[in-house]
Image: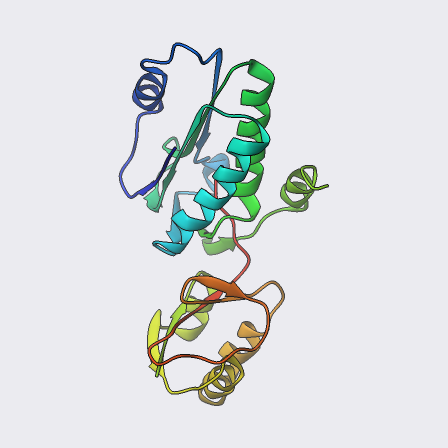
Length: 148
Length: 79
């Protein structure tokens, strides 16, 4: 299980190649890459803040829950912090399982958690100034699907 | 003495990120910060703000050991 925050850009292809290597019992790997959007010029830079130590610990806790719940063989979460330009990846999630359903569902579960419950704070810098971004109603509804 | 950490919009409201404050409980700590800065005090009691002591989320008022790290965590958003 790999959980990491980094303040420099990453290449999702390189991460997938690394994550896939040497797996002979894994039938399915699913990856998700979140990209910073320009939103038609409204957003010039995203700034992601974490609470070092605490943020990784909270992600590790939910990742462990995902590992058990979806019988994962392995998983990886890489999350950017600091300033991110449109077009750059913000987050990379990879899940490995025996079969595709578990791998898809686990990636979906992890992303819903990361969007609205993981300890990150996100500020958008645009031509109209700067604005803190909070989870949307849709984000809350997405994460609530996994309860119960 | 507790080490207070502010994140996200709380940091912008206060104009600082980290500060040592003399307090024996979370309630005392909030009262001290509110006396200094009413806008920050209101924000600390805002909707969805959680408190972590030594990197563990605490739901209720609690005593603080010497040099405790107290973080105020406004609503979170990643990805």
